[in-house]
Structure formats: C-alpha cells, structure tokens
Amino acid sequence: MLCVTGLPLVFHDEIGDWLDDDPPYAALPAETPMANLDRMVDTARQRHPDQSIWYVYVDDDEPRVVVGMLPSLDADRALARYLKFDARTGEVLKEIEPQATRPLTFNDVMLRLHRDLFTDLPGGLFLGAMGLLFLVATISGIVLYAPFVGRQRFGDVRRTRSPRIKWLDLHNLLGVTTLAWVLVVGVTGVVNELAQPLFLIWQRTDVQALVRPYSGLVPPRRDELSPVQQAYDTVKRTLPGMTVTSVVFPGGRLGSAHHYLVWTKGSQALTSRLFSPVLLDARTGKVTMVVDMPWYLRALEVSRPLHFGDYGGMPLKIIWALLDLATIMVLGSGLYLWLSRRRSPIEARLAELQAAE
Image (cartoon, rainbow, N blue to C red; front, side, top):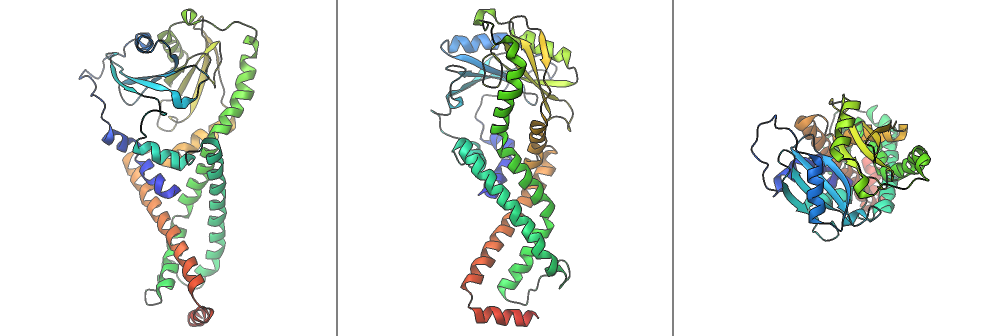
C-alpha cells in the first residue's frame, strides 16, 4: 500500500497542476513586484469577518499567495479555509472550502493513505512501526542473499527451471539492485512519520522556553498588530540569503501569542528544504530572535526530499518512480514465493532442493 500510494506522490505537483481548475494568473511581466500582503489579509477578513487569520503563505515557485483562516486559532485544522491570491495583482483567484466540507482530491487521498491511513497520529505511528519492520525485513534479506550469491553469478536468472525458481532469482536480483534506495526511503519514511510528535515536542519545550518571558503580558489585539508586509520585509532584510515562505499569526499552535512566526528556507537547491523560523514582536514588528531548529527537526527536513525524490527535477522523479515499481515487484514476488512454498508438498520441495544441488 505504501509503495502504490507513494508512486503518484512522487509526481504530486504535476498531478495537482493537471487536475487544477483554478483561474489563470494575470499575464504580467516577470519582474512585476508582489502586491501588499496587508491588502490581501484585509480582503480575506472582509470576506469572512468571523474567521481568524492563521497564516499567510508566499509561494516561491508560482506568483501566488495563500491566506489560511480558522474559526479560532485553536480550532481543528480540518476547519481551515484558504484564499488563493494572485501575488502580483492581489486579486482573489479561488477560495478553498474547509477539508471537513469539501470532497477530497486524488492527491489528498493518496497522501492521507500514505501518511496516516486517515487516522492522524495513531495511523502515522502505526505506519512508522510498519516502516521499522520493513527495514528489518530488508536487512534479513541481505543476510539471506549472502550465501545465495556464493552459489551463482550475480544477475543470473535460471529461466529453464520452475517458475518458482525463476521468480526467486528475479526477487533476489531486484532486491539487491534496489537495496540502497529501499534503505534510504525506508529510513526517511519512518522519520517522516514522526513529524507530528517531533513538532509537538519542539513546541512544548524549545518554543515555550523562548516565549516564557512574555507569559505575563497581555496578547496584542487585532488592531494592535504590526503590518504583515512589514514583518515580511524585515525578515528579508535580516536574513538576506533566505527565502521567506510564510508568516504565522500570533496565537497559533506552534507559535506565540505575542509574536509573528516567520518561516524562511534556503535559497539554493541543497538548502531549499532547510527551514529557519524567526520570531517578531507582533506589536512593534521588530525581530526578537532567529530560532535554531533542534537536530531532530533538521533530520526531518533533510529526510523529506530524499523520501519523495523531489529535489532534482523530473529526471530524479522518474528514477524514483522506476525504483518504486521495482520494489513493488520485489514485494509481489516475495509474496508469491511465500504462498507457493506453503502450497507445495514437502516431496516437491525436497526434489527441487536435490536438483539444485
């Protein structure tokens, strides 16, 4: 199931673009500057005055800005609605209803099955445990392959023997060929399943320690918040080598009631998955601190592109897909070998072993 659902997820962006029915962006010169973020936030509030702004996301691949809104900042994220803006004109292109009230897309179904079986944290932990067992099975396969390769040349497939022998040779050949990839994807998959509890640990330890000096202060009201555009520009000046991706409003689960939490990432291909959060005083707009991410979240960031192979463009995605298909063949042939062995009488298996000797 994980391999089958992981195959379309390798092409997640391409499938999303293919199925996308959003209105097109305005035809403007490439150097057209981004519209004011506060104007987009005001538009979102005018459309839904009973909602709270959760975050503002600025896409670095497309000219779009997404404003996320919640009934309250402590509400379930399944109740969030999203307004997609053209980043140059500031016009609303599309409004996405909350997940609880809209039909799931193909990518949504594949991702939820692959990530947590539609059961959130319990499902994620269960699949993480399955990933560990998968790694154990892979390592045991290496141990079993060692004596096998001593009896015949690498890559030999005994086509004149029984179907079971041929599938055994193919199983071993594909298994050892994809071994390094399987270990990388297996380890990074287990790490990814720990994303939610790891972020909760970080929020309840490091983040809470950083904002503890503000615990006795009154959180700012909406009319006391400094401009979002100011926070965006301030972080760009403070970290010139980083790309600002989102501004989380005060009161979010992973932030502070007194600060904007601005997420930045590296601007180079190798650093584009390494994030650095910045806390800004929500009243003054001044930088409070650049937060150092703990090692376990850095490991999570590094593991994500390795797991889906989406850091090297389409050529690497095709390689990832072919390796995924080969792994599906390994798993299928292993299941066939196990079932055919159980169906075979002991006399037939002994005769097969004697012929092999």
